[in-house]
Length: 156
Image (cartoon, rainbow, N blue to C red; front, side, top):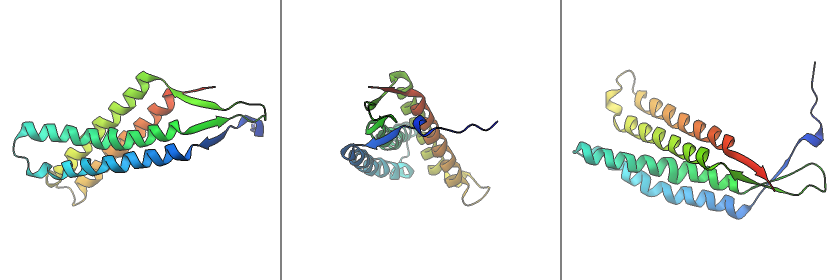
């Protein structure tokens, strides 16, 4: 049996341009110190300082750029119902799932940077390290995205 969606079943989405711009700006500004710190990882000789810089770089890449871009962008969204008398609904987020989404992308970004830094250990092919790092970063972004969607609450 085919189901046909009524045009009344859809919500119209509007974004506040200032918050969208702010999300891109925050991610862009956060990317510079993150990538600068990560570029020094090959020069660190002490395992302790390597770990500190790796965790800091993962936090910057995962939370200060990726997560903040997504979260601020989602805060910019307003949903409007199909009828003309519908009031706009602002999105709110469950705090525990939102924090979990940030933690998830932080850990996966840290692993991705570690894999990328140790590229010479992936002898299977010349792109082994970058491909594996890409996998970890994509896993983190996907997990963060779906945890963020699970955290969404629509209210007026």
